Image 1 (cartoon, helix red, strand yellow):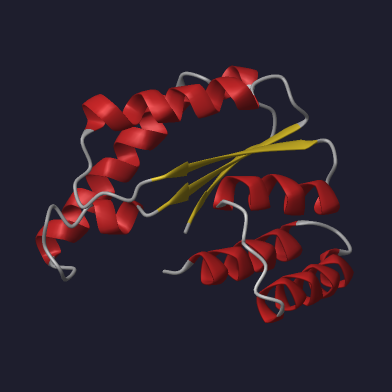
Image 2 (cartoon, rainbow, N blue to C red):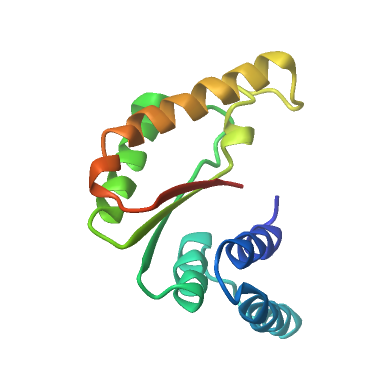
Amino acid sequence: MTLEKKMRLLNGIFAKNFPFGGDIYFQASMGINAALSEEVELVSLGEFAKRILSMYDSNARVETVEFSERFFDPLFELPKISTAAKRLAGGDRGILVVSGLGKASLDGGKNFTSKSEEAFERNRELIEGTLARYLPYIANFEIIYI
């Protein structure tokens, strides 16, 4: 999925989860369209998530964990999750955006199979299990997979 599609999807998800999201969604969509038409260099997904969430709820915190490799190795990936959870602690609302887990669960393959779907579920459970340790410290916690 391209960065542009991820930005549009995240904007839509936030719009559905917040009051008055429709108005903000329209304004943010216009901003995304303007940036793309002027060929402005896009910010990272993490930076976009922080900026767009501040429009929807200035008291919420968001962290993004992106998996871009074709293999999910818990030894290297779980520290990213723990670090993101620590940054979310103490806020009024915490949102973790997980991007690319499906691709990382392919284990080198090109297409989703029953084996890769099982790997995705294992990886998702591993991420959520890691986050469970931090739940007492993160208010109104939500995970968004894109």
